[in-house]
Length: 68
Image: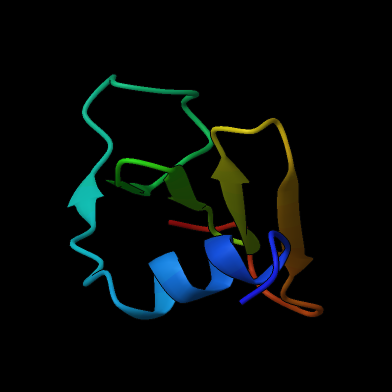
């Protein structure tokens, strides 16, 4: 396994447990999940997976409604 594969392997083996955002993070975030090497944020229009090494990946749900 190369260094670049390590985060992928960690995420693949880690169950995600999202909890409602009750002020733990930015108000645009509706749900958040945290692990030892990442934080995952769900908004009304997309998701972001932020790693502790400073890298992140985001996706936008085209056509998603910003309504709650």
